Amino acid sequence: MRVAAVCAMAISMSTAIGAAWAQNAAVGTINLTANSAACPDNPTPLGVARTVEIDTAGGPGFGFAQFKAYDFLRDGEVVLTFDDGPWPGNTPAVLKALAAQCTKAVFFPIGKHAMWHPEILKQVAAAGHTIGSHTWSHLDLSKLPADQAKDEIEKGISAIRVALGQPEAPLFRFPELRHAPELISYLGTRNVGIFSTDVDSFDFKIHKPEGVIASVLTKLKKNGKGIVLMHDFQHATSIALPELLVQLRAGGYKIVQVKTKEPVTTITAYDQQLEKELGGGDRQCAGNIQRRSNDRSARF
Image 1 (cartoon, rainbow, N blue to C red):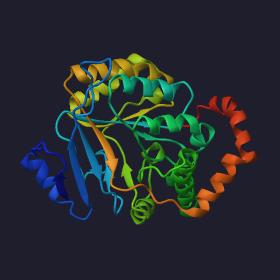
Image 2: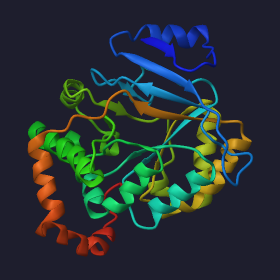
Image 3: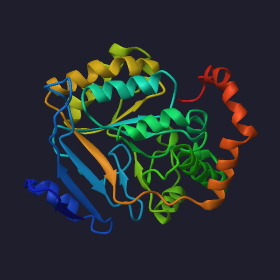
């Protein structure tokens, strides 16, 4: 993979990392930008150490839990990711914690949640975070017929676009991290990059802030770096995040922000369907949010 420094500051790369990227020439370019900016009201923030811009042509996969080919992180570097939002209370609390440390993350919202709470998703975008997608309704795609699985993917992508009023990044995460080979191929044809994880917090099982912090830090210490999976749907995570970010900084970890070269290309038919739902009678589903939120049978 071709790697270009796009800032005045020279970016050094170890031989090992350079060789690993060189093997991935088919994927495109990863541009690296070093960042340094003042953080209001926080003289020693976690911040963002650098930005990685990914060309998602061909649908590359990231995260060693499932994909071994691509590694853009140096030792001590972390990508923060959050699934299953946007959600009242929890997502705004996560955004507040990230803002207090002037750092950035990647969010993978569920399409239905985005349609229920477009105003919260717009807050995520306004704060400068990267937004991908996480299907329409968080079904296990590995158990669905291919056509239905693709429908879940595309409806989820279009839901984020309609809720935001603009296309998001061409990044996708499979619910439960479960996928079928034909769906990997399909996302490749759509030029959508796939994010797995290196460090799964398992916050959806822990449900205690101190447990979430311990889970992430213990696994990061073992791995030395990684893409961290958390959920802005989970209340314990929203409570844990301020202290977790403080401890990440104390531990010497550096945050990498992920961006993409181009926005995702949505499919017009799905956009039109979701635009009707957002502006029409189907939006009455928002009145059933509390009832639905009591169903904890799914991972989110």
